[in-house]
Amino acid sequence: MTIKAIIFDVDGTLADTEDGHRKSFNKAFAESGLDWNWDAALYDKLLKVTGGKERIKYFVNDFLADFSKPDGFDEFVKNLHAVKTQHYTTMLGEGHIPLRPGVKQLIHDAHTAGITLAIATTTTPQNVSALLEVGLGKDWADYFAANGCGDIVPHKKPAPDIYFWVLEKMGMSAADCIALEDSENGLRSSLAAGIKTFVTINQYTRNQNFTGAAGVFDDLSDLNGFYLAADLPLPKQ
Ligand code: XBP
Ligand code: MG
Image (cartoon, rainbow, N blue to C red; front, side, top):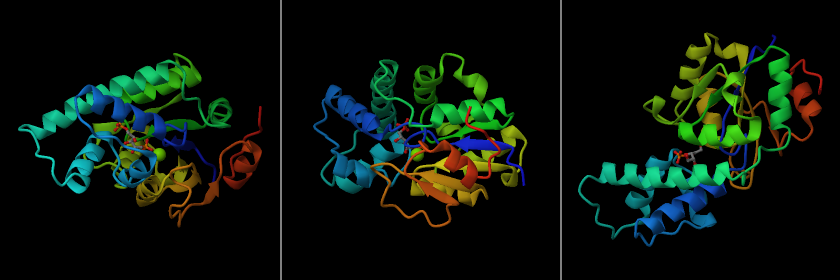
């Protein structure tokens, strides 16, 4: 079967972003007068829940027994998260988070070969723009036939909703595509949509369960090895 499309997760897959997210959450907490601090060990646990707003709610509900929620808690979380997004996109705009090895080359090679590209992420659309504007240039969106982000679907990963949304947008079936993910939640999402999935691990996800993945790699620095494993007819250019 010829692969017609590659669907990319963003956080952890295109770039090692999670510590940037974590620091931006902490800046937003401090700026809002909250004494919350998410260190790497705690953040590792909080990553069980995808989506920044959902993650804040998970923290409050499961880790902060004594916190009395303000009236309009949803609005409170939304505002806190907007401050976080502001810090995070500023950090990206300053070029602090590069694309992972091989990612840019893969996108160029696949695009040149006429393979359709798409994004399926739980993160906020502004975050994707800020990351890829720096990583791929201001015309980054021209590479992607579908850009599935954040709140566009009701249920975030590990639910398959975002992948179904992207498949529909591309007008393709799951069998035409492969997905690239970095986490167990992401893998569950793409597999539940019926998409063959390859995983590149990172610091936060290396010990997760990747049963069902078509292949697990440290990263894409050996791009030709990945093309071979994924059966992609791409010469490294
Ligand atoms: C990773 C996530 C995201 C980010 C935070 O998603 O779980 O929630 O940590 O993003 P993916 P927001 O790997 O699917 O891209 O704060 O913008 O929600
Ligand atoms: Mg991810």
